[in-house]
Length: 128
Image 1 (cartoon, rainbow, N blue to C red):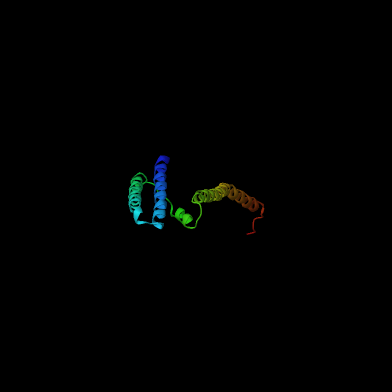
Image 2 (tube, rainbow, N blue to C red):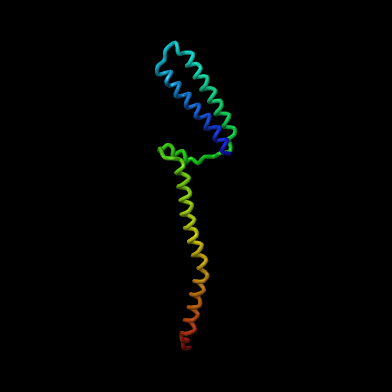
């Protein structure tokens, strides 16, 4: 699984580097650098094709929309996983507390029932 991501990461890094170099060429463009510009544009097209080929290997991967929100907010997307685990642990503790309470419920009902029966047995019968 990791090699799929490694392959994509490699292509993305090459693509970003080619875009950076293209920016340098364009920012100081001279007619004599047209051949280099054309070559960089061809590398970018090839890079996009390589990235698209990686898409086929990763078609079964789903990313929660919240991860993209984290990225848009400038936050580390790995924090999403951490916070999900923290929420799951908190919910687990809450559910565990409810389960423990429900386990004690029959015992509490039984104690109250015995107490009522005991009080009923001790109370005098009403006169007819």
